[in-house]
Length: 217
Image 1 (tube, helix red, strand yellow):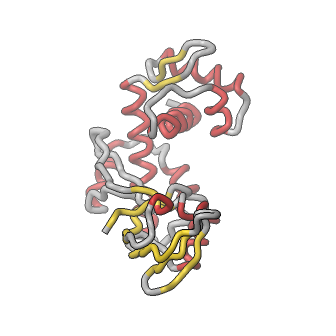
Image 2 (spheres, rainbow, N blue to C red):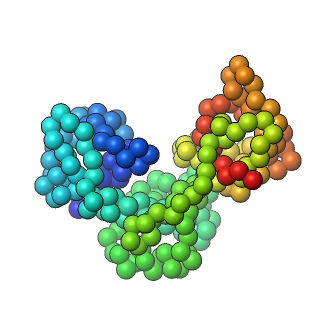
Image 3 (cartoon, helix red, strand yellow):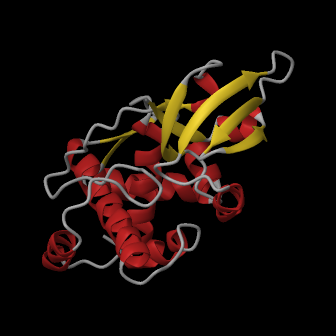
């Protein structure tokens, strides 16, 4: 596959991961920041390779071959992110763009050796699950911080928004994977939260709380 084909597969995978339903060409075009006509041309190529199910004016879904190929791209991306953070001391807000380049390396042997070298991690630096060599995803129990009520406690296990801006914001507030979070209060007007993070008291908006995953503790 070309780099472009791999990028399209990964985009469709992310768009269908939460609901497992078909997606529109317009949704793919928006994620890929391109024209719908360009998406249509690519989908025809991917369909010819038995990687997507595509019919004009209908939704798009990945075939079983397409799902496995997409998971292998995601696997490479997330393993490289772990490597960059754990072995080269990059911060979690720096690694996405670099991993976007490294994920296109073709050598399966290299990726499997990288996996072993890192100790076969199950999560990337942002808390997202890493598919194994067979494409199986580890199950991670999590829910959005915004869904918690006053008095509940959780451990930060991931982020929904992986943008550099959001991750830098979390760094400033001292929120990281593994941080203990207690809900001290919830405003009924705007659903903002008063929380305690590692003994620090913070006020966070509903938008922020809706982009943090926690595991109840």
